[in-house]
Image 1 (cartoon, rainbow, N blue to C red):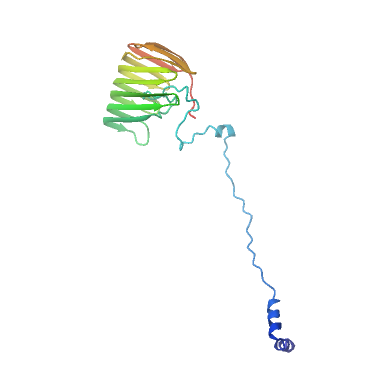
Image 2 (image 1 turned 30 degrees about the vertical axis):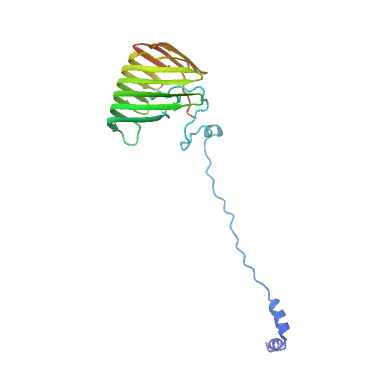
Amino acid sequence: MTGFNNNNKNLNPIGELKAQLNIPKTEARIILNDWQLETKKSKLSPAARSKVVNHNKPYQSQNQESYGPCKNSLCGCSCYSDVCNCKISDCSILEKRAWGTDRFARLENHEVSSWEGSSSGGVQYSRSVLRLKDENADAKLSSGTVGGEIGINGFKLKASADVANIKAHGVQARVGLNVDTGVSFTEDKVEVKAAGIGLTIGKQIGVSTPVGEIKVDADNCTIQ
């Protein structure tokens, strides 16, 4: 020990500096564990996942040239889906709605709906003494409707006064007076009417008379 201390005393300032520089350096290391987070994989196949609806995005049909009317709504819009996606303004003197659902009953209901596609557009006004609607059906009692649609595939003019107008699960039936007139040709159907008399052939099949009408969607269109 004494020899070691004597050696330190005999060092000149330069030697002391070199001695300090030669002190071994310590090294600190942080070792991160290789944690692997478990990834939850969907049990759906890629084909099924591609059909999942993203409700955060606005609805848009893949084939905008061949829309049909909303299956379960009497809005008059051409959106070809189970859910009405038209622009609608309505009012009523009394409404009773089931909490958290689309079910409602309206007394003295007035409604204006409009829609616009890539090659057509239209508007409709409807008034009904009583309207009942849920997810699968729409019924108007003692109602009247006027409206029109025009596009590169044809035109439609609507004017009716109905005792009852009911639409459910892609089937529409109404009883009353109408003078609907128009001609339209699309990839999905052909419709011809004159003063309430007419035929609809294609993915929607129907017969119209001045005192009543029935239409049936021939297939189930998928919401994209």
